[in-house]
Image (tube, helix red, strand yellow):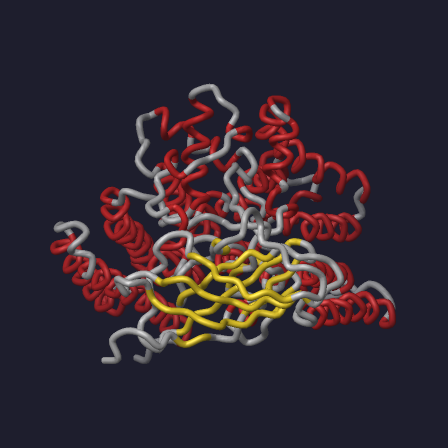
Length: 555
């Protein structure tokens, strides 16, 4: 008898899950030099995956639920066996944010306010810290805590229990596994395969485990959107009603990224209140108050401790001019397709797109109620800092929203007249497109590379000589960085023979030699590299075209 289409699709999905374990096993074997135990773990996981691929097609339908549970448990085991030993044998963090959270927790447990501390490389588990700093366009780097208090408070119990080695990374690994458990439990049978697949075959596990601190807020963001529309229904139990806004407040207290979904959920609660004929203003106010109260409950001790330090730290990503970076739209300048970017214009374009999406959710609510969260990365694709984590952080929670949010009845009409809907969506999008064009136009500073060479030992880059032309009517202070391949810049280069900051006069040009901040490894022969020159006033980044290194071994 032929297999029915639905069971066949389910078995194909679970086959892919077990095949992903085969991939994990082969990847673990490649890490044998990190830990000798991978010589056993790698083949074991590979064998488990191969056996699972066969087992999916042999297990009778009546044991399908048991197969799902076994598959999910095996995925968790595989993730722990692949990543646990690597974490246990690692000596350093891979991001400054993880190192900052660890140091902040240590300071808190000693009775010090983490927001008043200035972090130095000697206090952090960062190897070659210059390669991990978050640099500012004013020529410095972020050296203080820049996240809400939940980023380190949840780590404190681990350190009190004695886990001091890379505690941030361990906590994020556990949180990400917890997020996968949530997705597995709330998904209908037809979608449960998605959870182990995200654990095994996606970028999330590596990103959230080795330096990416976003894994901690992901499970709370999932709970925030799990049946979020139940908040307006008086027949729902009290704990289910308040789970959403409280979880959202916790997520927002860990990092600023979840802040972007708050206005969308408020709009959604507003529309749900209208539909269920409950007091709209009171319902929206209760939801917002729960979110804010939870956020403040976690942060208020630090606000009272030092209001100015807390405020400066939490708003630092929004108020400090950070160096443009990431995989979003800004990459067309950081990778040399265009040669100038004005960050503020991109930030404004991002805000306008968010306004357009909020209007779209309001006017086309029946269509977007379950899927609007997939559109949030469009907002974060536009700013001058759009790291890959910003673009994917919302996807696990978006899956939870899709599989648990009830549809809007078909009889519910779209709100607003056609003209109002077109204007609400079209005007901000058109303005955003204009701001994007402006953002990549009119460089305030011309940059020309005149000379470069390796140092005497051929290992590090030597000095570079640039001609900088100020196209503005005011003096500018340039700050120079060099990007080699895909490596993170290791700091600002120092002008030779210039006491104090280098200043280029209005409508003037100068030829200046710059020294590297440390040993910047020479590119390979014919490898691409670039020079960035940043100015804080006007705030802009000007870049050379993509350069080709002409020294070194030609083989």
